[in-house]
Amino acid sequence: MRFNNIVVLTGAGISAESGIKTFRDSNGLWENHQIEDVATPEGYQRNPALVHQFYNQRRAQLLDPKLKPNSAHQALAQFELQHKSKGGRFLLITQNVDNLHQRAGSESLITMHGQLQKVKCPVTGKNLSWLKDLTAADLCHCCKNPQPLRPDIVWFGEMPYLMDDCVDALMQADLFISTGTSGQVYPAAGFVKIAAESGAHTVELNMEATRGDFAEGYYGPAAKIVPAYLS
Ligand code: BV8
Figure 1 (tube, protein in one colour):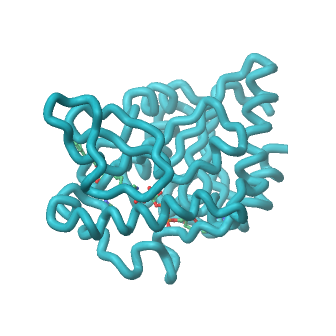
Figure 2: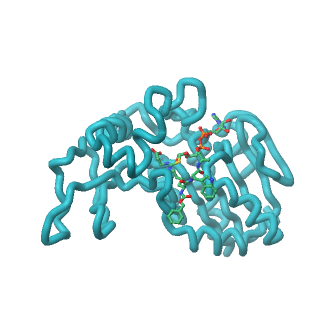
């Protein structure tokens, strides 16, 4: 591949073929919940038990032995290894909160919207691995006055993680690939513009074309088109 600094953004669509529902498909995750009730700080303040139930149910799915990275996750991890072995630079930014990229072996990875398998102290932000159900009775161990732990998830209205690192990488990229995302959630939806304005070639690999302005697009299931594009 003729590119050196490669940045990839993934969204829920890359995990769809592993069996994790996307957000906006008709039977998506949000269907039986309003975003405002389960994925905002206000919703959590209003009804922490509902939010814990929403995330406990999704966290439990990570333990399902049937849940595995698919060939799109694997192709990205293998490509990263090969590209870096030839001196190339590679960064994978995911909006997903499942752990499938990590399980596929991706290393240069930013989980910008947090991780289902982590919880954090609401005061210090210190996070820890957590795979069982979380309740309001689970307290942090880092404060003098221990606080109820919360999911380590970036809710709507909260700043995504490592945004400076993401923007730095986008501004140095010569190739930006967006895959499995509808490009409806900001600031991730603005990444293609930053990359293009910095001179990167931009490619969308998705089930269908989105509103994003890409130089190139290949459409179909990620498990097929991502390995094909990276080979
Ligand atoms: C913030 C964790 C400010 C929760 C999530 C302009 C600028 C900045 C902000 C805003 C703005 N306009 C509006 C906002 C506010 C808001 C926003 O964007 N709202 C939207 C709804 C308009 N953004 C925020 O609040 C962000 N924070 O801006 O903070 C700030 C500033 C200073 C100080 C403090 C704060 C925070 C956003 C993060 C929210 N958290 N996740 C959880 O997961 O429970 S977002 C959530 O949506 C998921 O992370 C998900 O990844 C993400 C995006 O969805 P997609 O991944 O794209 O999934 P979707 O279902 O939409 O699409 C799937 C795609 O895959 C489709 O295109 C489909 O065709 C395709 N597909 C399906 N199957 C396949 C496939 N493709 C290939 N193969 C397949 N098999």
